[in-house]
Amino acid sequence: MVMRRADWALVAGLGLLLAFMVGPFFWLVMSSFKTEAEISMGDPVALPATLALANYLDAWRIGSFGQLLLNSFLNASAVVVLTLLLCVPAGYAFAKMRFAFNNTVFFLILVGLTIPIQAIVIPVYQMIARLGLIDTILGVTLAQVGNGIPFGLFLMRNFFRSIPDELLEAARIDGASHFRILTAILLPLATPAVLALTVIAALSTWNDFFLPLVVLISPDVQTIPLGLVRFAGTYSAEKRLIFAGTVISFVPIVILYLLTQRTFVQGLTQGAMKG
Image 1 (spheres, rainbow, N blue to C red):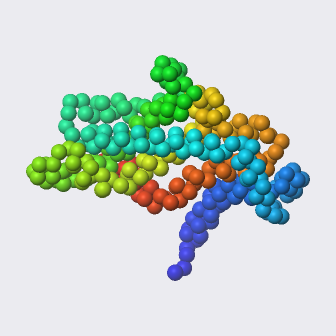
Image 2: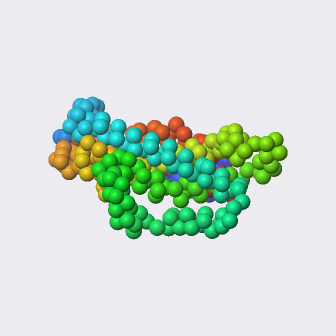
Image 3: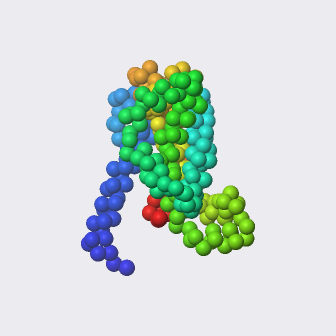
């Protein structure tokens, strides 16, 4: 099959875009294996002469990345679980149940998509403070769940609306309750959308810097973004440690995305485009 000029131009453009996106990550990973002398005086785009694995060991020990990863894992896991518990049944209710002001309430919730968290950070902080949850992982978890509900509800509601009503009506004739319809019939069909929401919630939580900065104070409860900034500020002269710590910070979430990439894209497309 002969490629036309337009095809070659498209391939070249996509290759250039890929290089532009992947290039910085490749440079970062390669730099994390270099010695301090190679980073400071060597060619910045050259490969490391040897793999300095000691960079990762030193960064892990000095930066307390084990504790930071644990905090981020607990935070992201709690956000994902709470988001699913709230958005999945709420999405079903708004998509398949008829009640007063259904659409009005739904679109009022969607207003949250247009309001940046920075605009409401003061009332959010005051609410968390009144609950006595400042400087706790639970405090930042609740704030992140609330911030993510509008998109999660939008995604799940649109996915459930794409499922034919005849399927639900047949289940109701057989005497199935709303709970059974959701758990036994719709959830298996909604696996791609649920997985997409899981990845989005985990990714946004793992990379969130602003809300943890507002809520968390003590180093022993800080998440990866906060800990990495603190680490980089303290050891700014040790670039090898900063590079290694940065790679450590994003490896878990990259692995999650790679493992779920195909289903994630499928669920995101169906949930966002249908309905």
